[in-house]
Image 1 (tube, one colour):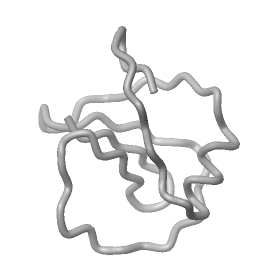
Image 2 (cartoon, one colour; image 1 turned 60 degrees about the vertical axis):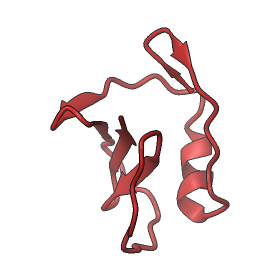
Image 3 (spheres, rainbow, N blue to C red; image 1 turned 45 degrees about the horizontal axis):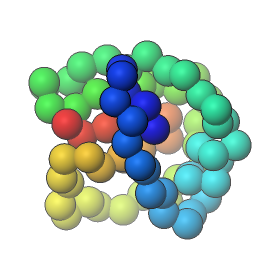
Image 4 (cartoon, rainbow, N blue to C red; image 1 turned 45 degrees about the vertical axis):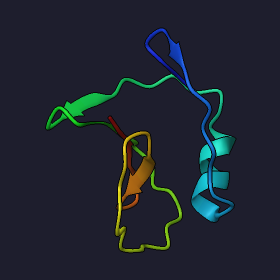
Length: 74
């Protein structure tokens, strides 16, 4: 994963949403700032989700919210 000029290794879980996301790659998106601690992108189409309560979010996590919000935690 590349953010601006920095390259990061991303590890995705083996689930439906990750598989649907991988099908969109390669992908270039513009992410908006939220609260100066995360970046997000709103996809126009929905992803298959199995909602879970996230107990602990940490820097570097990649998260999907609802069915179409992609978020990167700074």
